[in-house]
Length: 181
Figure: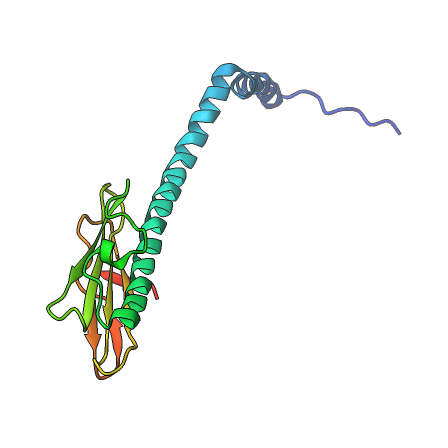
């Protein structure tokens, strides 16, 4: 038994004429320099925001690390001196007050033997700000409690001083910021 191909129909002839044209267009875009440029442009549009976001995350990691180091340094300083350091130089942990991305500060409170406020203010728009509070629950004890707060959105001002609850001996971040602990 011999099978014969289907005879051509007008619909099939029209489709077969379109197919080579579409194939030529796709081949020209896919293989030509112009097509390569278009492809690179599309990839750049997709990947560039992600890449820039990763750079901002790295800058923010600098601030988180430095504020955490300053809070731990304040704990050690409290154990040694029975009060909190009032300046970065006095704290002596090697963190500069100004870096390329942030300005760091220690803000002494009314009683420097009970609490201290630490800030990281971004120099670049689009970065989150950070603050930390280190608290001493009682003058008789040498222990301390601390919390690091990150602003919920990019800001040019650090979050307000975290609050300390002496009854529960806990520290909480102010509204508009989140605890990193």
